[in-house]
Length: 246
Image (tube, rainbow, N blue to C red; front, side, top):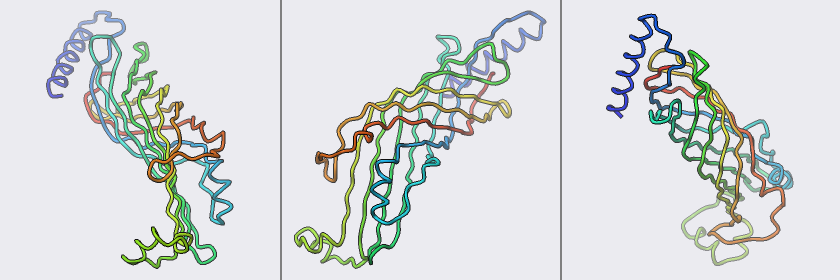
């Protein structure tokens, strides 16, 4: 990384000096490297879950967006002008709960996404970096379902596994799914100075899902047809630190 930053700095100095001489340099290739935190919002398909959550008597999951947090970074590869590669990883949880009929009931929706990023920065846009690209990677989502009376002890935790009557009172179930994604993205990086930039952008998460599993990786039937469509829009922001030459 130190060698990359040093090389980028030298190239930037050479380009800057050349421009100062009054020559028409045309479109100068972008270069640099950066990384930072990436807050994001995703808009999952909560409809199949909310119809069941409503029957549980607790508030539905909010459909106004789910907050995710993670990090990312990139570097211009210098072999192909204005092309940069990197990576991103984001994840988060949204939950709902309530006290119904003497039981604490809770549902947690967990979402995660990570992969490699490839972006092309348009050379004809000056002072900021507008990049079109994609995330190629994988993701996962899981839904945890709980019901209990808070009467836990070492003995009755193990008794739940052997006594069906106790098991019906305290429930812990997890359904999960993993998927492969190719997510087209559009990002804008606005430099605040030579070393800090603000990022805003978004994309459309496409999911190629595997089978849903329950608890200890067991298959189950009766899955709603629209549950397999987890395609969704997402919005990302971020503060990136590195070396920028836009």
